[in-house]
Image (cartoon, rainbow, N blue to C red; front, side):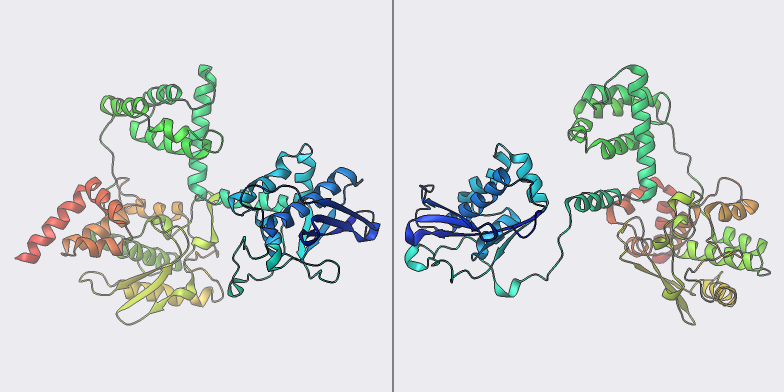
Length: 470
């Protein structure tokens, strides 16, 4: 052995001599055995005997070496053997050899050793053993490896790090705000189970009872969203939860509650061009904060933005610097300007989306308003990376924008009024559906739902087409 906590062994099948062998050079010990009867069809397959020898060396270390070495290197001259023990993938004939460590009576100790630094290395051993060639059955290839497909050298991770990094990736599978919302949904379900004495297991009966109970307290449409959050959060513990959610009993229970308790939605009104002009008049270009509000207003209206794409959340836990529009992405010309929106609802993977706003509007010129803000922003915060900055050097929040909006307009207008108002404006000007859909970054199905749920936009579309034909 190299040290009290390190070990190495060498293995090789002696098919030409009628046996198998491995030895530990530092202990001057060798082990030889006759070739056993291989599975049917593998009588002339040298790779099966190679893998069997490696497995024998590994089991010998586990069973007879105390204390168990922290590092173990098994040397062989066969790259195929290295590959199957590294990837645990091979043809079905080798399944028994690969599954043997997990089925061994000391399988737990063996798996612990495999999770440690167990290396199976391919080196030339011709000076020690005669390596069987074609006449000894060495013509069958177990794995086909192309020389052009070699992977770069990467350091292996510990098992604990793999588990940790996977947990981090799973945590980012959904957005922060969605995760917090889903957590609230699960808390609602857990509270329901606790006060009624039901087990947490989301069976069909439990979910249907939950639907009935919650529909008496909140809107049925919200209960449908609650079920989505419950499925997302509990799926790891109860894989059958989505199947139970789609069951006829749960679906029909929800439909019945919608018929019984649903009420018309209370939608916020879309902004009109007159509203935009009114806001610009109440916030003249007299101070930096007004310049900022005016620029966000025209970008949200003519760029069909959700308010959350231009300002940050009031909840600091939901802040994400990657979602902030960068000053470096701005391109300004005489008749238009553009910037890169890092992410949006239809594309949440930070691939970036170019938003272009032109000056071709009869009542408002958004290019002039944007340039006025940009000049003052660059004079104050020349080295700040974000586009939208308040006087105190922070990102404008949702509450900051809505406070100014409601200073002029009634509560029937809110953040989404920007996006709905812009879509209505372009529809009234005769823009086609696909053009508005592309500008607003809607997917096809989402745009159809949006038009159906916002009759004022549909009416503007029809009115714009009539004007265009006349």
